[in-house]
Length: 240
Image (cartoon, rainbow, N blue to C red; front, side, top):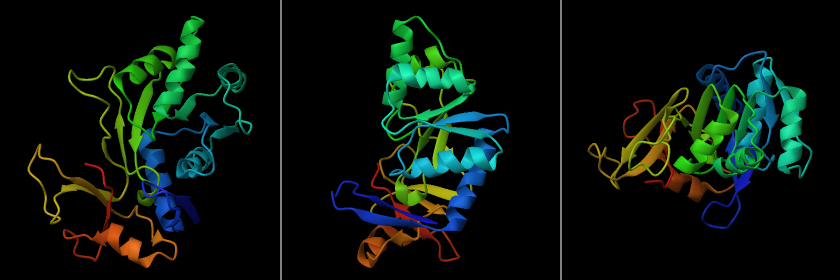
């Protein structure tokens, strides 16, 4: 279906290859999980260089909804907010930091801009960003999503709370979306006890095929799933 090049922590671009079946499964699962509707209208924020751009274009269209594309380089808060009002946009998807910037711009002008749904991803959703976005956009639904490119956009998501639990640094990444599995494992690919530190592995139907013409790296990052009887794979996210 597509290949997206990402440098990750190595600094060397690598092409992540995703099949039609995986992105189709993911989009259908997101439609169901997020409760997408035909009367929705979403502002498309993401650059095509990121896989979230594919999801946030296909998911509304597959739901019969509308998508409004911002102009290239159009990030000015006043222009974006005017665009939201002009088109009756009711779904916003952005990074927590950019959503917080928009919210702060509106708040300094004592304005609110209610929408039906906010979706954040790409970085941790801190308590400060959570409160700013909630106060100004007043979303009925607020999802926080997580996922490396290799796991097809976002394999996990949570409904953001109204306020963070005491002592929490950020909103949890939530539970799996669609026909996926997720485990916290140790270095021997064994499950760690509840509360222990381990690495997050994601598997099931929503994995990329691997890295384009990088078989060694593919074998290193996509490993056999020790819990699957059908020869499934797990992706080592590197996140603990």
